[in-house]
Image 1: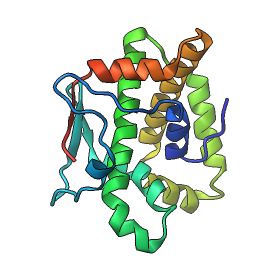
Image 2: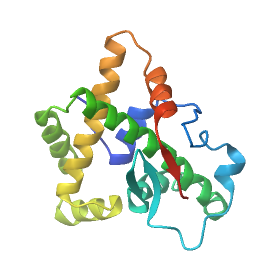
Image 3: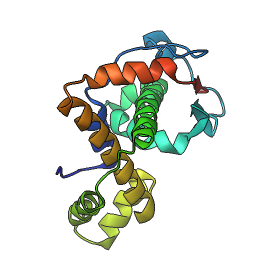
Length: 186
């Protein structure tokens, strides 16, 4: 079992081995650098993508984008915000494709591992105000955090199963991307 330090960190680790462009039917390839950097629509829509008909909302990608933006200098943040949001969206789309595949295969996270991860996160925050601040920073409440951990650990279980079977998780993700209906609205 792993000790998650923050929700985006665990997601980034779960998806670290899954990268690379692929096109879906009727969809476009993973956006290139110029597409990632183009200005954001104003206002930014609530639904920023659809993955096989399932909506992805802006609040679902903000924590990932914030984690990337926090690593930049203040001067870079405004200029790179569109790129960070779109990169976060691509990571989230990949995660959603993997989750859908895990569900289709009947892969589930172990409930004890989910609770253990949740408890570890609680212990990392010394008191109730720190815990509340952490949750607010992630845009989650305790129930949503447990659901997010379950999702991430389910995706991780799928990827681990692929590796144990001697299959390349990148090939799985490429196959999922190529057969998916992905509509990017951001």
